[in-house]
Length: 161
Image (cartoon, rainbow, N blue to C red):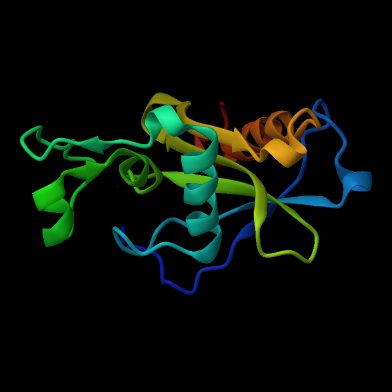
């Protein structure tokens, strides 16, 4: 299938009935559209990448240029090819990767992010990254992102999660 247009909108995600209730906290959840092209980040994906870099410093590494990148992560820029591949960038823009974000209502910045890859043919999903801003940790945002993704997935996986 053709890649989606760069103007595709984020999809609101409903919190799972079994997950924490964020309705009174002013936190909204949304699933970002698939990346239009490798390296073209939506503002929410750019915020998610910054959050991952802050909260998951052990993952904020460059892969050496002599280590071949996965074929699922094509198209590094000429500058990145000389320096190696940015591991977090590759995860967020992996083939089929989708990023869900939690943000405070009316705010552009995000307080949580979840990057996953649904595998419809095998009826499962890989969670690649999950992080919550330290200022909002312990409030159920990570659990809400996971629950919302679980509620969204059956439609993507042909009915079974």
